[in-house]
Image (tube, rainbow over all chains, first blue to last red; front, side):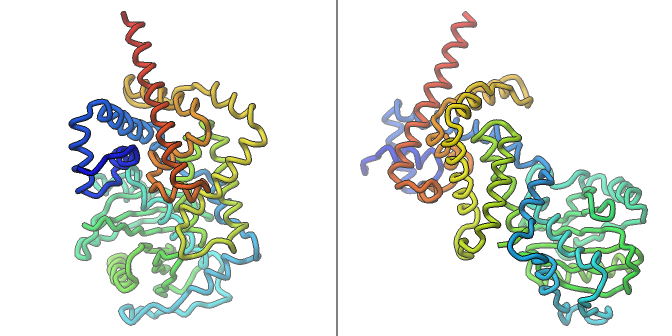
Length: 252
Length: 165
């Protein structure tokens, strides 16, 4: 057996050793009860740290911090221009929906939709313990509740055929009022979110657009007074198919 | 780097800051300073490098400056902060309070290593880069921190047993 040093014991406690070295450390610990007791204590310390502080991960983010992360520092209008620059026309899979070209003079509210949706996706989709406020077991209640808060009848699309199950949803604050977010997950634990808010801009309906906001793919459109944005860290072609499925169900 | 990327890192920065300085408001101030510093120094960040490690580096530097400028005051505050967060059963609360108190008694440089490795699960080499010290220093601080924690936590258990008798 190779000599086991102090660093190996720590690496063992932290789960950082390859399997063969781990086995050697275990053999050493079996023969050295004092070291075994120390290592056990260190493992318990790591667990205690998680027990004490993991709660913080599930707290809602303070608005000041989100603002601090979004502040336009060096160049004024940076985010607005960045958002304008990434709008591209959706691909061939979406033909037939009167695909709209981005219009630089378009209403500001519409321009913020993919960005707001991408941020909401980034904030809530990594959540392990509380990804949603109301889970999919209470889907009827969820849809009724969010419909009531938005003052508009909503529909949570079904993505089972695409391999994504509804996890649930939550109510979010938006610039212009309440926003509904539905979250879905597939077998690979990939998550997509559908962000729905009222849209008072009287946009031409069914114009389907795609944006990439910091690695989050967003497909968005406006239909009958609601703005929809489907977000995910998923390949754009697949996101396009999902958005297509959502669109067909919501606006048949 | 961009807005959503930065926002994705806020929960973990908050967790680390909360464990590092105890007081929730001060911890969030530290996170806010870190985010502002990150945006101000955007040009220094290399896109191919690990954003999370870079943010923790910025937070470490801010924390060190804070400790330096208000040294005795900050330490005193840390030692006196003994409020118990409400959670779970009594046993759990006891362990949580113990770990809070024990952490507060560690010297800041040991507390940082303890948290970067044990809570944030950085590799030893990343922790060394974040703290700007050689890997050997990380290991020796980790070793001292863990032994000190062990003595504190086991010492407390001994005291409690004596009380029960």
